[in-house]
Length: 593
Image 1 (cartoon, one colour):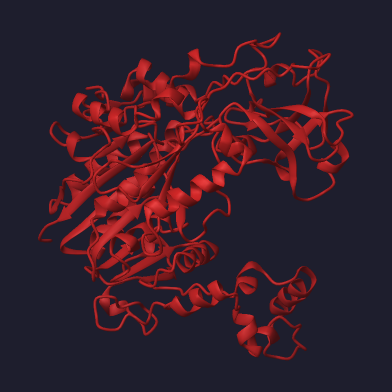
Image 2 (cartoon, one colour):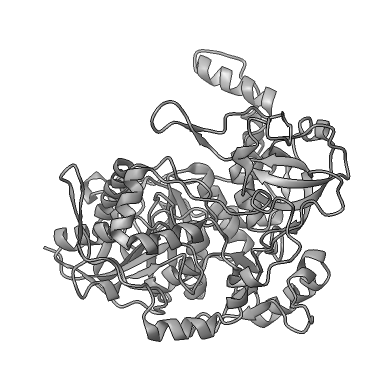
């Protein structure tokens, strides 16, 4: 098997170094960390080790090489050193956003910490990659070494948070009440506390992982504490409690700890310039560019939620054309509608549709099935009016007395089932559900005829093993990784049928797993001879993996052939670009048999 080469060629590496030159210092802060280490620096630090299933680790070692995979694993446990912001050019400009963000950061304590020590250099810059000038970077810093015991007579009091909470905190979020699992006894409001992470531990049964504690557990802070050793090297910052210990486990929401001293300093953009900016990973933006959407075209985003790539495509089309955003989840479709309304985009039509059932043959079409290749596209419920209503604060219930009446308990009768009566009793008891309170509707589609779209984006659900920061990966097995790939092949089978001859299909994932990346591309090229890999612009990712992998059980996984590796883009978390792990393949559709 031929191992993958380094993901950035020398020419690309030099360009990436130029583009991200201001990011490099925060990637190399090991020699700039704060001095005066803690009395137990090996304990009170952030040095997590990503634990993999042994067979999965062996598979990735074969794919990338042991040293390279070790660097990838290390990078995955850390956030990118910058936040990537996509500007909604339908509403504003990059320069205007930079001016607003600079003012916001200058007025916030966290923002001031991002400035250089002399205060002369701004952490905000415009992307210099051709074609991506509407992308803005806000540079963070880290890892910082924190003096946890400074000014304290003994070890610091501790607050233990869930892994999911910790991953959000590492990206700039605060410590909210639902994420707190345990803390030291006698913690009062205003106390200085060290925040650490509760990690899943292996159980007695193979593949069984759990945190092994109940919410509200009291931490002893001593070696006799059964969880003492598990917390070593998993401290993410120092802060001040907003609530007492009792309050943290009694109130349902709110900030539990104001984390003023963080291992990684990245600004939070929660509720900042809504509708004008969208926080999105750089490779996801590149995937929308790879699709190369043109004004007036009909485009399908098969797995659209939460709508980041959908809205990116709409902006590249200058909001002219038709984009069908599909997702199998009703609530996720509502999320796409909400985002489209916030950004003022009118060319996006949403529908509830399982990607595995996207194709509907012409003789099976009904009156409710979407026909996007004809003159009338109204059979997919067009939610432009619904989006406008959500943006203006009007709900469907406010407009229609019939909707309000539907939440009342039926009086019974032959035409009302017992299940419906129970459902309405639940509505009265628990209040209106998410769909009713938002006033949203997700039109359900039965699928589309073959050759319905000029371009199709399949950003497939995946193992997400490229997302950062990631502190746990133990649940994935070699079998589960293969199954992800099989699932994606079925979706690709649907996507291929929906693209017209001469059209474009883009396949992308946010994982480092070759079974879901190169192996799926190999499957597509071998099965559909009318598909060919097409050049991508901009091209800032590295090449894919060439060769094959033979497993102990005899299974053989084929990857790319020589010459094909430069036609895909693979983003390596450990590379100079400092992105998430991501993969993009672009196919041109030739004459079909």
